[in-house]
Image (cartoon, rainbow, N blue to C red; front, side, top):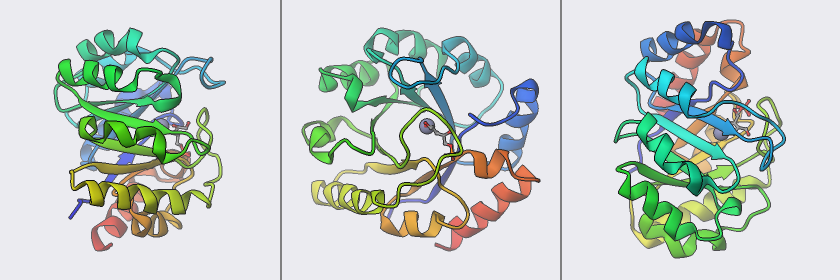
Length: 223
Ligand code: DX5
Ligand code: ZN
């Protein structure tokens, strides 16, 4: 049985008070903090790099999940691993990794957990050869780059297929879903097979982010 986990993405949080954002997540004891690293190349947006990731690492005790939306991520595994702790994870996009198993091995060798993300158009077949190296499969349910986009509903089938593949393989791999997840669709996404739910703007654009986190946590507990 996979534990349901909430992973808030701080992409759309107010970075002028980052410390308060981190204190809020700590206070709410969320399961993971999802950090979106974008290079303006693989995706149209640019966010932050290892320095900010390390600042966040030093200011929060929760596990971090670093979602690398960058070209040639293998160039940055070492520097990000130095910015992180061992129970953290690095997620690379399959579309950016011509030598995926090699890149995953770099993450494993640096002592971190591994993850692979797939864009909505990328088939699950692309990762079947690396299941033994994975802790997390991240199914993108929007085209990556921005928070606040609408969930692509045809991805529900892909989430279910990913869960079936994992169950058949018999390994403990989490299915994480990222993009357009909100309090209304979270049950459907969970029931489809996702156990780690990334939620960004639904939390940080809510009138009261703390209440929203607690409402989502309550919902996830009873699912
Ligand atoms: C989008 C990012 C997401 C984003 C999710 O490319 O990978 O993590 O922050 O934000 P929402 O929940 O607003 O779709
Ligand atoms: Zn993300």
